[in-house]
Image (cartoon, rainbow, N blue to C red; front, side, top):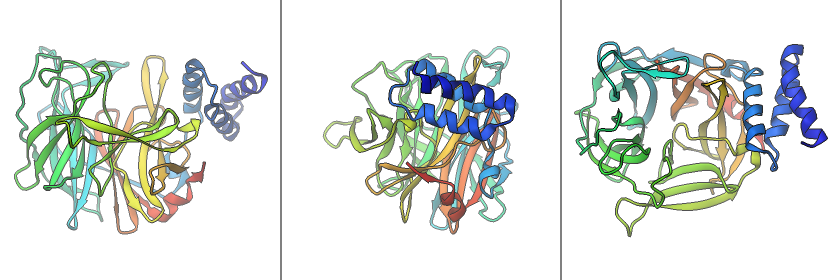
Length: 357
């Protein structure tokens, strides 16, 4: 470890105990911006940064509202909502599952050995952020295996060539078994029903595929914010059914290496806006921080916000939806895999907290 890196690691640890949180943030940024960082030091820096964390309200005006709808079944949770602003209406799809996370372990109800997910569709008021007309989504039907995780997880709402659909993660679609796969399905907003599930195949059956971010106004997704130094997008392969092609976009710096998918990638005058998450660990417990990211028109990252949490530091929060309505950015997120929330932020003040790379 070089003298400079060793110094920054020491500052990232001791700044918390000295009350010098800004110094700790700067030190962890310098560490994570290095190209020569080992995986072990990367993980350590992200864990240290959790202790210097800030809430979104510390960075810019932000109002959060609980999405107060009932779960798909008694005793289940509601979390990880997604958004779609279409034809003057704001739609929200909320995940509902049967498990709880306790000390980093997934616990299901007595007598049930599977993690199960259903999804709920509702309308949202832009003014009050209140949900109405909540309905459990039916379908889509698919041939499944006996894998211990079932259902469409962490759906992202998206417009398609024929209407509205979702992209999501599935783990028990035959003949796939256990590996996370991206699937798409059509969604009828009137009947709250999904159909036509298609699993997008991969050349590598050993890789998990999840958290692709739909690019609004296209049929593509941002696959990775930094893969071999570039932003990578994917879109369905027109010549090979149920497969996709990857496209390398502009180069991005090392600090983006831990950026993982969040909500949709939404057009703005500067290019595109997205919300991503970064993962760290406190012992065996995961904790996520988020950033807002600005892409240029070629989908290279040009600006990022500081990392932040929405409601609570050093815990699991996960943003799966982003929409711009008028002069507000709406972000939907789950808290502790237990509750669903909506956050409203003025567009201009959000963009002001992003900094050029």
